[in-house]
Length: 330
Image (cartoon, rainbow, N blue to C red; front, side, top):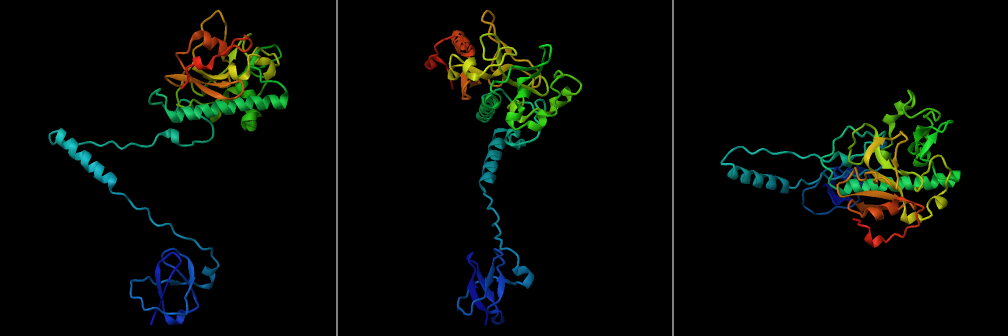
């Protein structure tokens, strides 16, 4: 008479008398069980376990995941939709479009590409906004870490011996964005578009890439700084954050989403002049733009901000008072 017992997974098992004390494998979960020296009178359908040989006993126990149950709800919805379309169309055939997940949800890794995917719209997608906010926060922290290590903020460009800007501050910041290996590949005494350095454009880090995939030029970025006498970034001057942000780090822009993208290694940003129109901002989103403040905090400001208030946030030494209740944010 067979011995009936249960596995720890709940599956009823059965083994012959001669297997008492032997180790067997549960056919449901694969767990190794010992046949007990007892018998029950339970009459229910049970599964025959496999006898495990010596080599199999050495293997670690593994539980198999039960196959996921497929819900019939999607089929019902499709069927109802088909009926509605057929009725509405007078019996004509209904066509169905299968939607695939957005590419934005995939982590492509490696170097970023700004011209491979066309964005659907410039709607303020929450996922895109969250990603851009995080990018700017990491860039802001990178600038602070740069100063901690070297004593000054990165200048707006890497300059040559003759004072000519060669490469962007975005290149100088690479070691503080976990991109030391890429930084070492640049020839810092050559311009961004030299035969050697131009090849590195295609290796743009993901942190600089447009979160929507949109830019007119390949390997370009919207993350830029304001430059000029009244801004934190003034020529080749060595400045620390305390002296550069006399209006307060929480009241002054440090890095912004510009209106137009530029090649990420090119020393090109947003020149500010109080007598000229404010450079365009917000090329990534329709309603506003993200800014990384001097303290590395990130805000999302609407495009309908008052121009006088906007200029006060751009300048770092104007001694303006900022009323944040009047700053339109979202």
